[in-house]
Image (cartoon, rainbow, N blue to C red):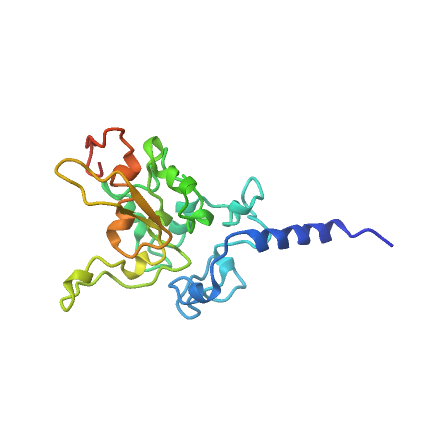
Length: 230
């Protein structure tokens, strides 16, 4: 009986990776801004329908990346460049690249902080993932605030009927993990214990990943502000 070909082993390995790797739920993605079959992502990979995963993911590992690892299945582009490849005013209508290039644009492309993690890990709100935000590793990338598999179109709107709901996550922030302080801060003393949430329900929970003790981790809880973002 002849031995299986190398291609057979390659396909089996790919199947095992697909079986064990974190995945975007199809129903959630197809309802997202990127996955919409009429208005979703398109034009960056020929031969695929609008909203197809292949516009961002190459099924047989990244064709341009130096290594073929599961976290490089993003068509050879670092995370922020992958996003800005479309969100530069053409074809996406909103020119996000111009916004992040501003003086206080959160700076996902700033030298030393860009490409701090890959999009493939964004759905995990674990201790190891949270540690990537702390101390000298404090950063912001596109997927720290936006989940490409769940984000919706639209803007934050002010709810005049139920004002208490005005800090609920808005459509573009859907599916992003955040943190909730275990207690209210006191005068000049921040909360030092936080619960990591796989999906934030309030906008501040996303902001608090970077703009609180959760990220700074100062031993005495006292934070020295050195700039507009802390």
